[in-house]
Length: 574
Image (tube, rainbow, N blue to C red; front, top):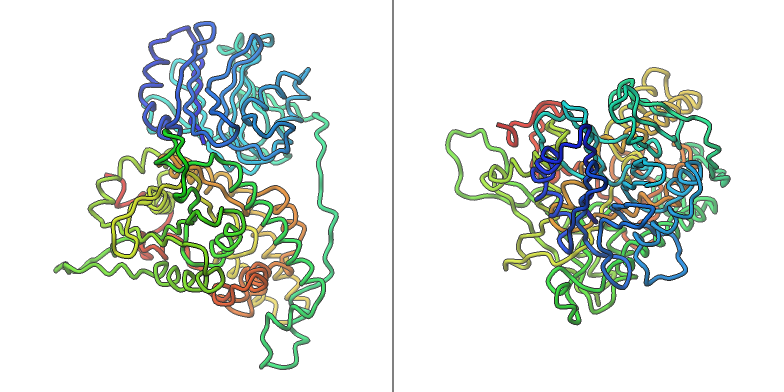
């Protein structure tokens, strides 16, 4: 993961550009501790990049400049390449320079596999292009200062006199440098028909080129089953629900298909990294320390990832399971000196750890207990607020704090101090949005069912209401979760990778109807994310497959259920 930055001066004032870079220099370089550099183009465009090396035999320095292009790139490209020893950044530069026009560029950027954000200048066109991947997995912020200068960066912190937005992942944006002071200097080559947040970010200063001839690939696989129809035919109440459903060939085949796609996603996210941990990277000595960690609550999403990761991490390398807990918010007048760290996620984490030991006894699993007091949280409040920015409410900052401390990895292993050495952190992001894991999904389903009675027609309407809620969640995922998580986690010199958000896996799940993903009448711990639970059961995770979903902010105990999630944070804002 890298930190990328571009400042386009409206009046050739390099002082303001350098001041702005200086204000976010530290947070940019935290994202890329292995190398950083700055480049001016034509005294009007300032580029900066910091690099965290993963792909290629050697670190690729950035910014990259040729006689035709300046490029800064942040992310991972998982395209199959002829030369696996070549950096994905160098590969991308060559692909950009092979493009003849803006339609070629759009086709290229839209076809990239993996999380990314990118900024590049085409010198002959005198135009700066910028984008983030369509799922919005990597952060890219956009802002305009009072004098009309333009800022594009992975992270800013709170830069004064600049209004900053998360760039909507709608396509390939561009700025004509000769028109920077015009009223309409921006353009967008969209890869989606939904550009609903464009006006909020750009106002009326952007033009959209709708006719781009972009090829779209839709999943043609259809699965012929419905959980409601199958389970209403179930005669014996004693028969295990999972065993009963596995008798349906379509379900068993779908689980195999989903696990194949997820296994490939985990594989490419583990193998595409340097063979060194944080400690050994500089010396390049043989390294048997952990290089891959998993944000581990013990729930179904992360337990599946842990089991699949075991297939691709070398047998002599431990895997870190990072489990975070916060001191409970107390309103008592007399404070207890004892802190109970057995929060819900700690309990389920230990339970699932035992299951991993049973299924993979030869793997060394390092269970890291990360305990965060309210005093320590308060000490870090400004750091976390700057990373979460421009988001600022209770939910964003609670989750941001949980992810920041978890990814830092400072805790205890078997009661002894421990510090994570992993440079890659696997997350379960996206699983709840794809498989209906949130309470609001259950609420949408049950509300409709109550209003129309428990008939087959009512169930059909309830599943349609749930499908509408899932589609809404999916559309707003980039603006609600992913960019924030990317900014927070990368501050600890670690790259977050989200296997559930791999392109093939997403396509497979989105081809399913809501009635093929979950069945809430079975109750929490079974009905929510039912098809994913069946996948877990198929892997042997019999305990984890029935654990109830808990939101990270409650499972780790950072948040108070009495707070309104949309309010400003009490603990992280002065």
